[in-house]
Structure formats: C-alpha cells, structure tokens
Length: 330
Image (cartoon, rainbow, N blue to C red; front, side, top):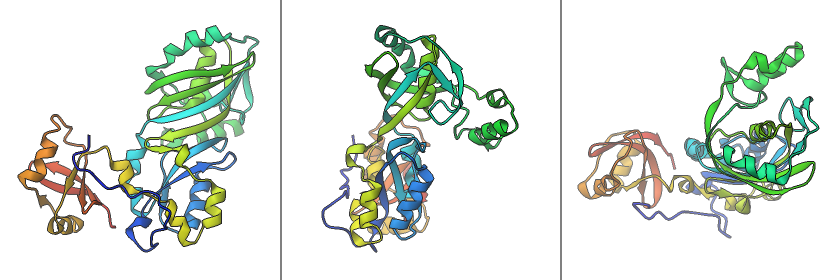
C-alpha cells in the first residue's frame, strides 16, 4: 500500500507544454514485427526531437507488443521496469528446433513426434514456479564480455559449433503461469506470466524437449511489462502522425507510474531544494514514521522523495536522513 497518495500524471486529451516537466516520462509503444527495439527507440527519439531515450526490456525483431520507452529523466528509472513482471502470448510449431529457437534460424534438429493436448497439459506444471533455464545462444546474455548472439554468429561464420563454444549456464527464473490457449496436431498457442530474465524462446525449446520432440517459436507478442499494458500502448503509425509536434506529448505517462510501488516520503520546499543539489536531508518524525511502519525493509531499497506530488529524487534512507541516489532534474 502506498504511504503517500501520489497524483499520477497520465495521458490526457490536452497535450502538456513540451517545455514542462511532463515531457519526462514513458511512451508505451506497441512495437510491430520486423524492427529491432533499438530502431523503435530511434523512431521515438526523433518524434520527441532528440530527447534522451532508452527502452526497458528488449523485444526481438520477430516479436511484437509492449516496449516501454523512457524519455528524459525517466531513463533514470529504467531499472525499476526491467525487474517488473511480464506477460506474453506465443505460438510454436512441433517437429523442429532452430539455431535461434524461432523462425529466423536454420533447423538444427527434427522430430516426427507430435504431442497430444493431454501430453502438453501434463508437462506444463514442471515449467511453473522457480525453474532453471538456459538462455538461447542468440540472446543478449554476456559471455566473457561479449553478447551471446555475437559469439554465436562468429562461430557460424567460422563453421564452429556455436552452442559448444558458448556453453551458456542455466539460471533461475520465475514462471508465474504457463497456460495452453489452443493446439492442433502441428502447433500450439500459450499465455505466460513470468519474471525478469525469462526467455520465451527457451521455454518453447525446453517444452518440446520435455515432450520428446522439438519445437520453436513462430509468433511472440508481449502483452504487459509491469504497469504498462498493450491496451494502453500506441503504434508507430500513430506516433508518426503526431511526431515532432505538441500532440505527441499527450501520450507520455508520468515517471511516477513505475515508482508507485516503492515507499515515498513527502518533502517541504527547503528539503527538496537541498536534495536537488545533492545534499543530505534530515527528516522529521512525521516524515519517517510511515516508512518505519513498513516493518522489515532491505536498507538497500530506494525511497522516492516527492514535493507537491512531483518526484525529486530516488534516495537512500539512513536513520533519520536521506541522501540522493538519482536526482530527477524536472
């Protein structure tokens, strides 16, 4: 429960003044199939006249759906979105594994086995909860300082065995739900809710193996990232129509949207000014008591300091005082 009720500045019918602090926030983009996340960010940057941008969670070119893009000072809060729960719908086909675990790679293994609906349903519980997963060879995981996809591509060029060269380690991931939506003899469609670091392509690959066959992803759509939903997302076509003009700013969602779940402390004007200058601020008992009432907290957890319902800084709490971690220059 929030300690302080924050007024979240959301999308409105009247566009904000592009010179105001409302220009710093999030664009929830419905990324289309066929372009990279980096390309999508570049398009958004152009629409907002070169404002600093960054995305929270890469989507492959063959995937579509929610791609949260931070503008300006919101880039300082990207880490709070990267760790958020995500949901997806995806389709797979049985009978073949590929280099990339999707339709982009060459087939590396084939199988004539086609699982029944009953077989699929029986296998899914083993893929929920805290499980171990090996990322795809063609992923952004770092291997000795290099991205896995770069190592894999180099191995392909040199006719080496990419997976043997990579030997990616399994890691723990959280799968909150894994549901079968539909299936036929050759394919199946699923809905997944998962935590940070989960690869849907690996999930499809591993499910195929568990069913004694082979599988790869044919379609992937991200439905949500934390508080950002595809229902609230805008298309690149719409952004292009309003790009480089004041109406584009009406689609910005407040920075506070992604900080609504962390403890908050309300400052007075003098405290806010000191914090913006990077100074330590001493809190009063009235300001600190709501945070203390939370009970056990990790001291490394950030607190959001606000003034007049506007974020001032992400801060570290130490006894009765706070010190800035990231000042938001709004």
